[in-house]
Image (spheres, rainbow, N blue to C red):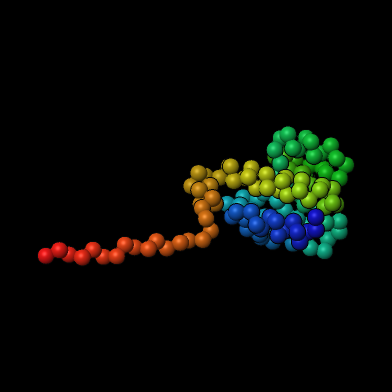
Length: 133
């Protein structure tokens, strides 16, 4: 997957925000908590780090191009470089799971807010009742 395709996918996940931190790193958050980050645009090789489950961490780190993420490995984060190390469908599934892992740790209220439809529909009020004399 290209960096642009990954960014587009991450931003399509409910409640995802993007902030630029740490000298240009693109940080993807949900509910104010980080679930993925990508290297600054133009940096070679392009890389991404994201949260995984315990099992996924052990499976993914068996691949030579997927390593425990520095400083975050104890929390089961992996770093992938180059980005073509996974098939696009697998990549999307792992990224969606990273998002879901963080959402599951948010408060119930915040989880409900994230699952609510993004559009708000106005309710039509009933016409006023006529008074009987």
